[in-house]
Length: 347
Image (cartoon, rainbow, N blue to C red):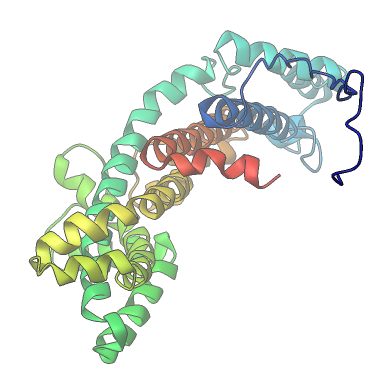
């Protein structure tokens, strides 16, 4: 404004009024444990519903007549009619699905054709034997994989000891990809038949568990060890590790205090995958060792066309796998809170 210009008179114009946004009421705040719980609960519910539907469709989608498969090709029409009535095959598909949901809700899981007992009782008898193999196999896999992978990763860092790195990768790859029944058969031939050191089957003594647990854990242990080695090599190149080396810390303290905590997330993720895969691997393994778990029972149910037992065991194993994945996600959220935001950022 120039010196000669007059000052404006009257009140100054007021700034335009701004609308104040109304606070939005959120039932669940974004991010954090609330968002994590909503995402995981929704995913778990959808997965369980899909699993229930798939197990129900095992019988309707079977080729041929399930009643004739049970009774045999030379069975009389009266026998077939009785079996169809007992299985509910003479009812509409929707009605059978409602009855199937009722069996699940009641906890019976249906009735076995062979034993005329609730499927839940059979599962409750066999499940502890399977858990007795799976849990030690997972723990032993981690106890082998983490130290082995870290040791090889430290020894071969920055391109050192190439022969060790190549040899470890080759052996670990072969053992990780070997089918569990092949490993189990080789262990039986070596330690039971050739050396006579361990029993080849059963569950009557603790020594009978050695070979099944070993067969279960060898492949996963080397699969995890390969990943731990790669993660260790990556961690050792980080700036904080160079800083820790500059303080001249001892090798054991350096790697246990600074490297190992940064491997926990990947190790936990792999542990969940391994535990889930071992639940399926026991179905084959138990039949190699004539072990009285869920795997042996489901194969016998297939032989005798005991469809409710087949459905019940598959349903229970699938539910356990889903719960294991949920538990791993929760532990990861506690150990590394950044994983809680992963689902929201991906959207």
